[in-house]
Image (cartoon, rainbow, N blue to C red; front, side, top):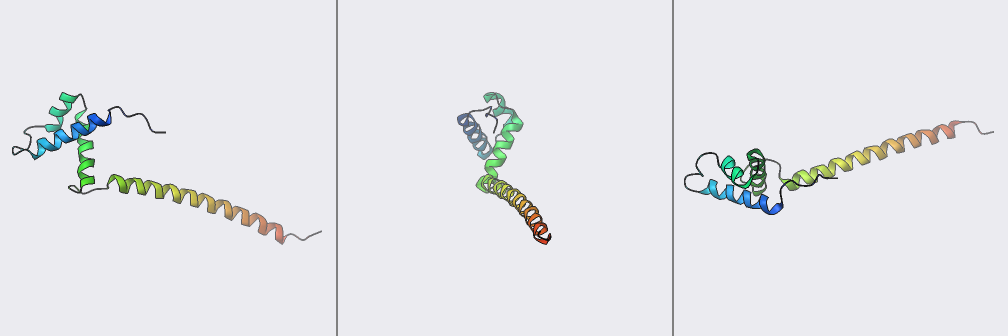
Length: 106
């Protein structure tokens, strides 16, 4: 079960929009945009930097694994684990029944 989010989605979206707008300004936002906006909104600057980085990746402006790709990858890894577990169970069962068939009947 996922932990509850510390910041509401509206605050997160607003903070990301402010940073992206500041970075798009002619002066590039001047100084440390993440620190300034983070302090104004009460958000840790590194948290804000991570949010903006992920949005830039999702938008295709920065290289990396998109949120959709990461979600799909996690689903596939979970499925592989389940299939490997099922294969192990089937191998054990087939070995058990093969041993039963090899025993002489009475």
